[in-house]
Image 1 (cartoon, rainbow, N blue to C red):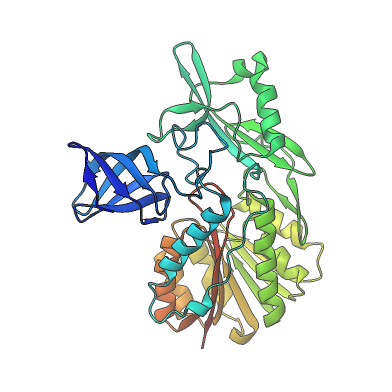
Image 2: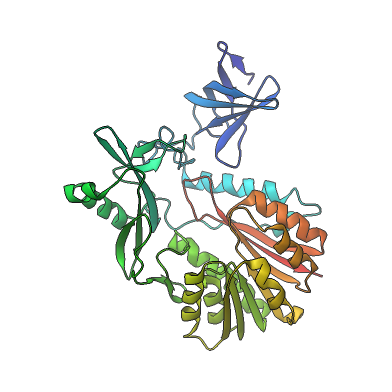
Length: 404
């Protein structure tokens, strides 16, 4: 269907696909046009917000021809004021298909990748009320107090009475606090309030940083209990966390390595999976000192011999890699969204390692790093998504590489 210009900045456009980040993609005057909160096959009316040399950014005004996959969002702010959810306007199965295709598009850019490497996507057991952690921001404007998420300008706070992504228990705690005038009096402009839930600890919350003497939280995982310091990283979706641990465990059970190296290990989630899989020797490293202490504790109940170190990964790696037996070692990496830094990536490429599990929540930086690893002899054995973050633009991935 041709695109029709309604006036200087209003257009009707047919949506062809959905880009990573969640915006629908069509074409206007030969240029790529991004329209958020749209679906493939829809015809929509949009307002042009910004024109660049090769693409146009718009805002959705009206869906003229809706997709049969379109639904009413569970949250009244989704698709309007809150930028956190990119996909509440579609059925969950459709969202997972779109994310899976986005991931395949990224990885397929790597030379000589076979379609056979892609594994079916793993869905979350819950598409809503799955998050065990949220961080809200407080804002004071004259006599108005707001507690919620940042809007698209990353400054204005949208007052949020509840969040359909957060667990029911967190929402109940949030409501109780909002109904308590005493809690409101403790808030200050610019303060953050973090809510965290586990089956063992219930819901706890803290303002700004967690208290120094707060006890470690205890997570019930598919491989046993894992203790996590309140201020340390943990996966926010329990069912997908377990799916990740099982995926790592499956690889290790098939490979039967003597040594498992867990870089960016945090509190040792994958190290626990390795120990539960019977790996005799486990080595972990992370910048987070409290997380490393928790990892040591988490592995103390297993027969595996484990060693953990706190510090910069690139600084710790040479000592770890010096005496490894390549055929008997599997290394796992789970870096931040920015991916591997150049020094760490170079150390991996020049090492004698030949088996890597790469866990990533950023397919763009993952694809960049995989391209370099593949140039240095690694091949992708399998790759797939685990939808850790339903209704948002993000997802987790696991790629299994082998160097021959």
